[in-house]
Length: 101
Image (tube, rainbow, N blue to C red; front, side):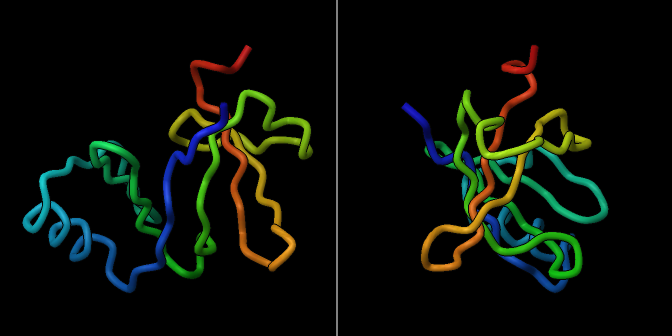
């Protein structure tokens, strides 16, 4: 079964927003660079993205992500492709690095 990997929200100040989540909630930063960060909660991760770098979206982790097209490899070791659902929402189909062959 596929699973929701993360939900991405756009932020205006990445470091300030990371700090706020770390101070306000019991979570941890699992990835961070100059354009986005991934904050891990117990049940799902939250991606904080800059508007000029990434769209707001949610990511579905799928072993069959390639069936939607050519995957783009990312700095964090994952690979993905963005598609739109019938209502125009951005959906990222994600393949984790350990699933890569």
